[in-house]
Image 1: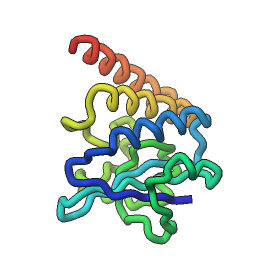
Image 2 (image 1 turned 90 degrees about the vertical axis):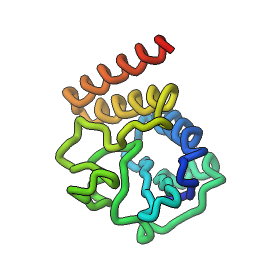
Image 3 (image 1 turned 180 degrees about the vertical axis):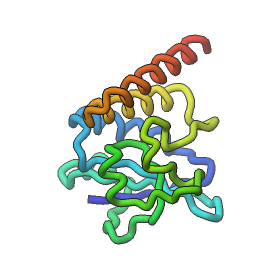
Image 4 (image 1 turned 30 degrees about the vertical axis):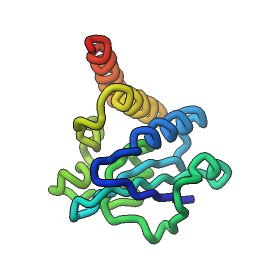
Length: 159
């Protein structure tokens, strides 16, 4: 089941949804069917967060509207989920770094950190990426993300 919700261009409100989905995904053992992706409007007017999850988990995301898979954008940024599942659904948009990174570059975050992606959000994101890559038996990728998680924790301690 796909759900979507539009957010303003400043991304206000996305952090709490990201945290909720990340915790939910980890609690369920990071199932293949759970994905969170972001599609940015070309005119800069906002972002749409799309989530895929089992229908039995729908109630946790009451503020999202249902959407058919046929309505998915052609390009998106993987925020949480398995790379393989993401790649089955979205174009890689090679050469368009603002929309999505190349499929072949699995050890680099698909989303560039900006001023909104700091503190708790960064810690949650890095932990989720580590868990996903561990679940995919990608030990080198998970090792890199464990190092990134450690660096984020160190930066948070210095605040």
